[in-house]
Length: 118
Image (cartoon, rainbow, N blue to C red; front, side, top):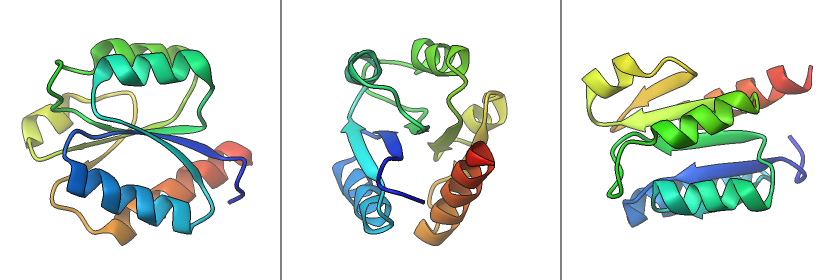
């Protein structure tokens, strides 16, 4: 993975967001972190992303508009949530149930980015 790779992280819990951001940046990835749907939509308007990691439980509502937008741009997505029912309903990408190991997330990120590059 190279530093050109840009990850959109949408997570409202600051401790979780910081942990994920730190792991991604330590792997040489550039991260734009957002705490809600609208800020994430604004971020993708500004700059394209290579992969999105999206919490499905956000303070400003379900991320449907965001996931539709990303799916339309063929951006791979990883959904994270502590709610198994929400994860089961997420069809555009991969899922991880909270709590998860950072290594499991990073393995998934690497695999998805390597697959997108190849």
